[in-house]
Length: 74
Image (cartoon, rainbow, N blue to C red; front, side):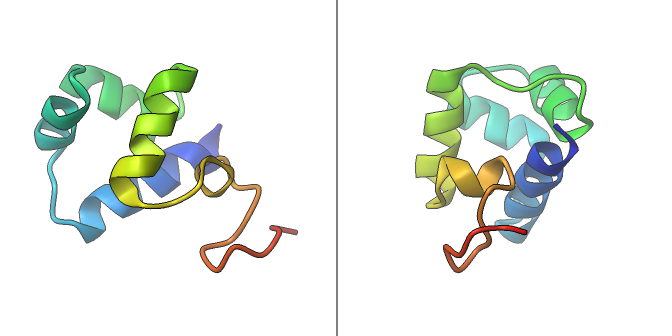
Protein backbone atom coordinates (compact mmCIF):
# COMPACT_ATOMS: atom_id res chain seq x y z
CA UNK A 1 0.00 0.00 0.00
CA UNK A 2 2.95 2.30 0.54
CA UNK A 3 3.80 2.49 -3.18
CA UNK A 4 0.26 3.55 -4.01
CA UNK A 5 0.39 6.45 -1.56
CA UNK A 6 3.80 7.62 -2.73
CA UNK A 7 2.71 7.57 -6.35
CA UNK A 8 -0.46 9.55 -5.65
CA UNK A 9 1.50 12.12 -3.66
CA UNK A 10 4.21 12.43 -6.33
CA UNK A 11 1.66 12.82 -9.13
CA UNK A 12 -0.29 15.39 -7.15
CA UNK A 13 2.80 17.42 -6.34
CA UNK A 14 4.07 17.26 -9.93
CA UNK A 15 0.87 19.04 -10.92
CA UNK A 16 1.16 21.54 -8.07
CA UNK A 17 -2.10 20.39 -6.54
CA UNK A 18 -2.88 20.47 -2.85
CA UNK A 19 -4.71 17.63 -1.16
CA UNK A 20 -7.81 19.80 -0.95
CA UNK A 21 -7.75 20.50 -4.70
CA UNK A 22 -7.37 16.82 -5.58
CA UNK A 23 -10.15 15.97 -3.16
CA UNK A 24 -12.46 18.41 -4.94
CA UNK A 25 -11.66 16.85 -8.32
CA UNK A 26 -12.45 13.38 -6.98
CA UNK A 27 -15.43 14.47 -4.90
CA UNK A 28 -13.89 13.14 -1.70
CA UNK A 29 -12.37 14.62 1.43
CA UNK A 30 -8.89 16.02 2.03
CA UNK A 31 -8.65 13.49 4.85
CA UNK A 32 -9.13 10.62 2.39
CA UNK A 33 -6.32 11.96 0.18
CA UNK A 34 -4.07 12.18 3.24
CA UNK A 35 -4.97 8.63 4.33
CA UNK A 36 -4.22 7.27 0.85
CA UNK A 37 -0.90 9.10 0.65
CA UNK A 38 0.13 7.91 4.12
CA UNK A 39 -0.77 4.30 3.38
CA UNK A 40 -3.62 3.95 5.88
CA UNK A 41 -5.98 2.65 3.19
CA UNK A 42 -6.62 2.68 -0.54
CA UNK A 43 -9.59 4.13 -2.43
CA UNK A 44 -12.28 1.93 -3.87
CA UNK A 45 -11.97 0.59 -7.40
CA UNK A 46 -14.00 3.36 -9.03
CA UNK A 47 -11.93 6.08 -7.38
CA UNK A 48 -8.70 4.32 -8.30
CA UNK A 49 -9.77 4.34 -11.95
CA UNK A 50 -10.70 8.03 -11.68
CA UNK A 51 -7.25 8.77 -10.20
CA UNK A 52 -5.55 6.91 -13.05
CA UNK A 53 -7.58 8.77 -15.66
CA UNK A 54 -7.01 12.13 -13.99
CA UNK A 55 -3.24 11.63 -13.78
CA UNK A 56 -3.07 9.86 -17.17
CA UNK A 57 -1.42 6.75 -15.77
CA UNK A 58 -2.48 3.12 -15.47
CA UNK A 59 -3.88 1.56 -12.33
CA UNK A 60 -0.95 -0.87 -12.50
CA UNK A 61 1.38 2.12 -12.23
CA UNK A 62 -0.50 3.43 -9.18
CA UNK A 63 -0.16 0.06 -7.45
CA UNK A 64 3.52 -0.28 -8.32
CA UNK A 65 3.06 -3.13 -10.79
CA UNK A 66 4.61 -1.18 -13.65
CA UNK A 67 6.99 1.70 -14.13
CA UNK A 68 6.20 5.08 -15.68
CA UNK A 69 7.34 3.84 -19.07
CA UNK A 70 4.88 0.95 -18.92
CA UNK A 71 7.48 -1.75 -18.25
CA UNK A 72 6.81 -4.31 -15.53
CA UNK A 73 8.13 -3.32 -12.12
CA UNK A 74 10.67 -5.66 -10.57
